[in-house]
Every structure is written in structure tokens, then in C-alpha cells.
Picture (tube, rainbow, N blue to C red):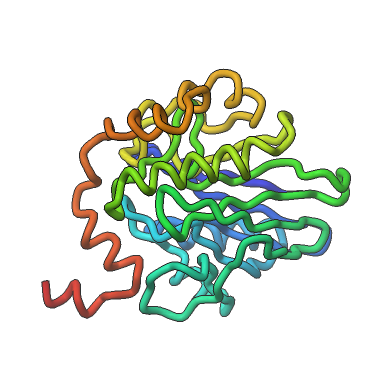
Length: 248
């Protein structure tokens, strides 16, 4: 497998390119709008085709490069079926399987940060049949969890986030590596570590949010940073609502 993180320290964001080097098929996850050329160039250097462009959710803190990258590559743009967007996309569903040659991806729907949030569980068949790592988007961070308040209904979303993490992520083996969509510097959660990756077992033991019961978890998530600057315009851009932006 070829696996390449792209780290953006201005907003504490991460994007990922990964896939099968043998058959030359790869995916890009959570692309940034200003760096579309970098993903295309890296894939070309590795003799890989970008066949899937995926956003783990509709982002509120940065402009997504997913739709533009998909357009350039002539490939579908993927987000969860519940995403509210005004542009063409291929819907992802819970337990969907994506094949990238010897690399396989299972979609896990993890509502909480947003209704359309997904995590991507990745297996490299050349390594074995057990999953290797998971891209957790804005659901689970190193030392923290995603904030639930951006869509509104903060307490209800926090309860959904608790269920997503405990029922779907913490049931995975301890050795699964965790690659989140953000690290320290992001306003998409509170208390994020500057270390951009972890494991399920490490988070289970050391992430302070994961030792709380449901009520304490929901209460703790009432203390979040201010909302991202220009959030409404960023979300409008990421939903394809360009006309609305122009008239605003």
C-alpha cells in the first residue's frame, strides 16, 4: 500500500491519499481546495490513478477540494447519503465496501459531529485480511472528540457521537491505527493533541473523553471553542451553493 498524509498546520487539518501501488488505484480523503494539484501530482509520481475522492463530511472550517479534484480526475465525488449538498455526488452508505486493488475500504457511518460523518476502515490484503487503520474524520481525534454543536442540537448530537464512538469505533481491535481529520490548531474540537495519529487502544486508555459515561460526555461537550470563522460561507462553498455566496 501507498499511504501519504498531507498536513496543514494553518488550521490543524489533515488530508490523506492511499491505495494499491501494485494496481495503481488510490483514494483521496478530505482534500483541501488550495492543494488539489498536490494530490494529482503525487498520484502521478507513483503511477497511480485517483479513482475515489471522498469527504468524511461537509466541512465547516475549510474549503473542500473534493468536488474540484473529482472533476479534474473525471471521477465521482463521494460523501454520505445524508449530506446536504447542491452538487453531483455518489452517496456512501454504512458498511459500503470500496475496492482499490489490494486496498479495501469499509464505510462506517458515525453521526455526531454532523449527521453525514463517516469513518473509513482500511485493509491492505497484501499485509493480511485484518483491518490496518481507520480514518476518523471529525469523529475521533488524538486526545479528544469532534464537537457536536456546529449543526445545532448540540446535546442530541453529542449523544449520537457517544454512540458512534463506543458502539462502532471502540469495538475495533486495539492495534488499529487512527488517523483523524484534525490535530492541534483546529477549532473542530477541544484539547486536540499535536500528534496527528494514534491507535484505538491508546485512545481507549488515555483519551479523557472516552472514560466518561454518556451523561458526563454530553455535559463535557458543552465546553467547545468558538465556531470557525466564516463558517456559513465555508459550508455554502462546500455544499456547492456558489450562487448563494455571490448574492450574500
